Every structure is written in structure tokens, then in C-alpha cells.
Length: 69
Image 1 (cartoon, rainbow, N blue to C red):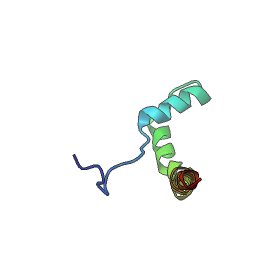
Image 2: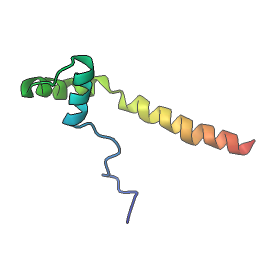
Image 3: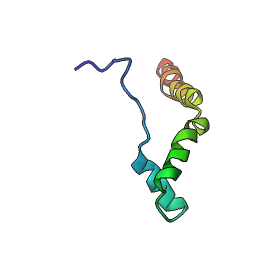
């Protein structure tokens, strides 16, 4: 099994995830129209570049510094 596939999805959010947050925040499920509104704007709130950079720093750069000690 090849694990370095460049098209492999690393992280995703599904409707059930959105409904779980809605239940916690609003104490109710979202309507289909409300889900569409959230779907259309959720990417505006996720700083994917920063998330990847932070992970690289933590797991690659910091790990390399620790092994050099």
C-alpha cells in the first residue's frame, strides 16, 4: 500500500462534525440551508498554511534539534 500519495486527504470536516459543534453551541441541529452557509464560509476560518507550518516546526524542526543534543 502506497502511503505517499499526493492526493491523499490528510484532514476533513464532514456534516456530522458541523452538527456536533452546532449541538454544543446552539443546542440544536442546523437546517440544510444553515449547513450550506457554514460549508461556504468554513474555509475562511481555517488557516491551513499556519496549521501545516506549526506541525512541521513541532514534529520536524524541533524533533531534529532534540536528536542533535
